[in-house]
Image (tube, rainbow, N blue to C red):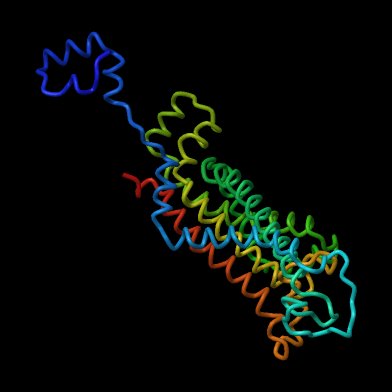
Length: 313
């Protein structure tokens, strides 16, 4: 079998002879080891700030489980006791106690798990639904007017009104809030995808695919979707802190997950009347919300840039 070095310094006739009798080597010359996702991750890892926040977020998630194991109290067995109420952080109560004398350490970390889980579920749901409808919305011209009117209808009514009606008519729970936020929030993702589809829908290779009778789903998934990866990643990453912030706002207004399901937003809502006197009750949950928000903002932008084919060599 010929080696790559066999081609060096040979004339055209000699190269023809080698290629003619070594087809495997001829194919190997034009082979590329390029990997799109490999290039994406290499570009992302070059951004040291984004890598730092990725490690910080993963450490936060892992520690939220460790913290509940090493803690002295279990959230499920907490009993209100006014005697140790508003105890500042000490060796017994690492994050202090709340107004009912309950350990704040286990409450904060248990709420962190709930909030992160809600954010990931909502962001993933909005991404899947938004991308599917956004592709159809942008590619099928006949449906553009219908989807645009639906978008304008939902977008013209404040988000808080939807969540208030749902909380009053359906109830408050993790599942209800997750489904409600996905149902209302996917329009933004779909709108962004639709605008991007407009840019690629009538390019030559798509026109050729339609002339050849290529199925619609294949045109969308093979010809158009790969160009939207960076936009989808960025939108999904930004939806995670947005969901946590929105849940915090809704819980602050009494429209969140309900008192039986603790979250970072619910903790912030409970301390709104006395956090000036006991700032530690605000600092711990607010710091975690801030870390998550900043982490996904920076990671989302960095990963979006890394996924952009124009940044690949």
